[in-house]
Image (tube, rainbow, N blue to C red):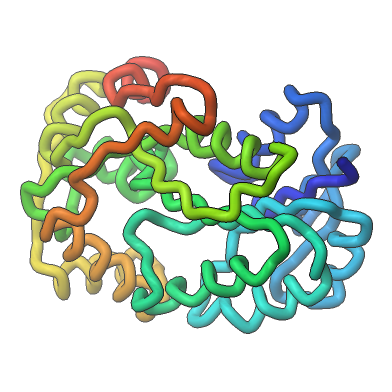
Length: 268
C-alpha cells in the first residue's frame, strides 16, 4: 500500500491511528498545520492549496472534518483531490443525515471507491484534563443536558484500532461501524468513578437543552456548533446512546476498554 494520510494526526484519535499504522509497519503521512517532525506534512483546512500536496500519492485517508459552521464544502473539495483513495471518516454514533452541520459528511465519503464511516459513542478521553468535561470534573461539577440517560463511553484507542483495520484491510469495509465501550453509564455514574480517582466528589448537574447550549457558547464554541452538541445531548436523554456493540473486538481485534480501567490509568 502507498501512503496513508492521517488528518488530525496530533489529536485524540489521529495520533493513535498514526501509532497503529506504525505498529503495522507503515510510515503514515501525518497532516498538521505546523510540520516539525519527519513524516509530517503541512495541511490546513482553511488553505485549499494544501489539499493536493497532502494527498499526492495517497491510497487511504483517515478523515476528521474541520470544526465550523458548514464543513461540507471543504470536505467535498478535499475529496476531489483523491478520487481513488479509500476514506475512513470519523463521525459519531449520534450523527445521522438529519444532524445539522455534520449530517451530510458520510454521504460524501460513501461516494469513494472504498470507505468506512466510524460512528463512535462519546469518548472516555473527554474526562481527561484539558477537555471541557475533564476540567469541569476537576472543578467538581459536570454539566450536560443528558438527564439520567446512559452512554457507552468508548476509548479513543479502541476507535483507532477499528480505524486502522478499515484503512489497511485488503478489502474496503464499505460500511458504517458503530463503536461503543463494553457497558453504558449515566453521567452521574461516570462522575462518581472519576471523582474517586481525583480524590474529591464530582457531581453531575443536568440542565435543559437550551441552557446547555448557552453554557457551551460561554465556553467559546460557535453558536451553530453549540446548538448541534446540545441537540445531541437531548438525543442521549431520549436513550439514543444506551447501547453496546461488539465492533471493537470484532473489527479491531481486541476487547473494548472498560471505563473503570480507563479512569484508573488515565485520570490524574
